[in-house]
Amino acid sequence: MPLDEQSRTLLDQLNKLPGFQTLTPAEGRRLIDELFQAKGEPEPVGKVENRSIPGPSTEIPVRIYTPKGAGPFPVLVYFHGGGWVLGNLDGWDATCRMLTNAVECVTVSVDYRLAPEHKFPKPAEDCYAATQWVADNAASIDGDPARIAIGGDSAGGNLAAVVALMARDHGKPRLAYQLLIFPATDAAMDSASIKQCADGYFLTRDGMAWFWKQYVRDDADRAHPYASPLRAQNLRGLPPALVITAEFDPLRDEGEAYGARLREAGVPVAVTRYDGTIHGFFLMPSVLDQGKKAVAEAVAALRTAFGK
Image (cartoon, rainbow, N blue to C red; front, side):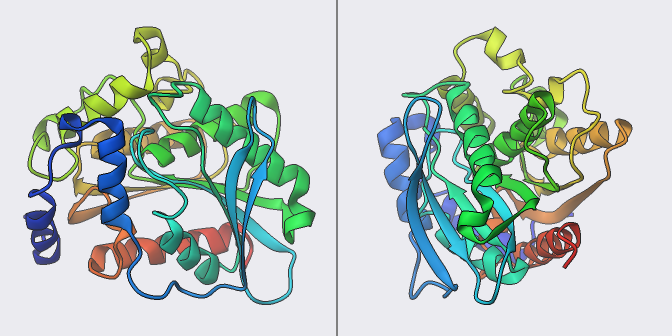
């Protein structure tokens, strides 16, 4: 189907912006900060706390959102998108507040180290360390260590999938669910959707190639399952998942391929493609009806996984 009217209107504005591949990382960060700067008063939650937690080599900033009411609450550990290069806690504040209230969970937003200053596997190692810290310290944040999910969008979806692999491979922590929102899963970038949606849909093939170039050092990194989870030989034993994709997204096919591989491995998984819309739509439910529907689906899936 063609782009829906809301996505076309948004895309007309986004296509006036410079491509990320034409910018330096610092310029790209400023651009994404301007795009995602929250407008108006933030959605209230019970409590918001900024903390630093131990990481592999340095402390990791996190923002902990707690809903109103009495805990212990289930916990969602969330990794923001931005091609492993862009993004921060502030840019994803609205999304985390929304999920905290709708799911009735503690949400821990992780400010992992960014490429190219910190290349693979450092961002993934930060995300795994943060998830393990949540499991070890759940009681201190009014969380339930038996109900921990991970999630993220785009590069954050990649990191969530990778953390699930790491947790299985290391034998801890035990995860209840993984929410993978238009995830990047394969550095090969050879899918049909990469070619079909190469240009004109906000995230471009050249832009995605630039992000991968910032993140990985060489072909060995690209092939590693902790960078390209679609290349993992074995996906058995991973937590149940929801994979959300967009019709006009270069990452569409690799996300759906990862969902298919999870299903083949016996992992309970739902894969939902949202037609007529573009990469990033989940983050804009206030202006995109498809984003609103996707958020509702994610909320329902997490509530079910948490037994709520």
